[in-house]
Amino acid sequence: MIATLTRLFKGKAAPGKGAKAVPSLKDLQAIRSALLQTVADCEGISVHRLRHKIEQTQTVQDLWLLRNDAYQLISQATSQTVAAERINALLAVFEGWVDARQLGRIR
Image (cartoon, rainbow, N blue to C red):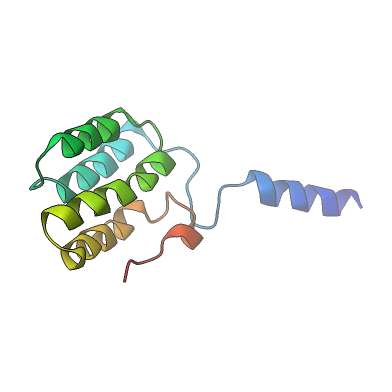
C-alpha cells in the first residue's frame, strides 16, 4: 500500500512527460525571444500589450499560454495560415519545457 501511494505521489509531483522542472533565466529569455519574433512584423496597441506581457512573464507555462494571443494578432495582421505556421514553429522551442500532451499543432 505504501509503495502504491509513493508511486502515485511521485507521478503527481514530478514534472510532466518530457517537461523540465525549472528553466534558467537564459532558457526563459530564449523562449521569450522566439515568441516575440513571431509578432515582430505586427503593429498596434494590442501587439505592444502582448510584447509587454511576454517580457514580464516569469514561467514557461505562462509564455505557452500567450501563444494564443500571438496567434490572434498574427492572424489579424497576415492570415490564419501564416499565424498557424509561426505558432507551430514554436513547438520546438517549448518542447521539453511544457507537458508533451499540450504541444499540439494548429491546423
